[in-house]
Length: 101
Length: 167
Image (cartoon, rainbow over all chains, first blue to last red):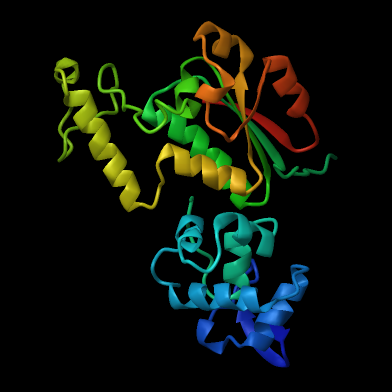
């Protein structure tokens, strides 16, 4: 565990940079984590992040997000290039999902 | 003194030569897992593995019930090989396997190919095997980019941090 400053707040993060306490998450924090991943968040990103936060405990998979009605799988890869599930969950401030699909 | 330096895997070239459900899914899970992690993935289907990308066969793959020592009865008792020879048993076991996978959000083969290619993964068919089984491009999934030789596939498999995997 390490400390990291996002949006003026000192937050605890895992070694991989995931927020330890998801309840501390704000949209400002999301923007700053996204910037580190070279992603500029749009309205569409936030819709996906909202879905991810609401379904954080249900065993998230790329397939599930592709069926959410918000974005298809191709679109999901386009929004978060280079590892959409691990990147989007990091930006959404939730735990890294242990998913193989 | 030598310094230990790990090279990250950046690309996987996967060869699938068998049609059993478990062999095909091993290839598909590895390919999908790679694109999920932001890696490049290319899959080459050859010999009986072609069933996985043949429209008529792809969603009807079977689990090996004969000669599979890992096979168990529900509850964990050994599965007698002879039982696997009874007509319908293999189909029943395979259907059960597929429903178990669905529960884990593991998709049917056609949808799995959708997912892999949506993430930038590439699917190829082996020319030799396609000729041998007298198949045509239109018999194969639309996700198949091309029918190529193993030499062509190797030519695409190189680069730093790349691995060739055979299932």
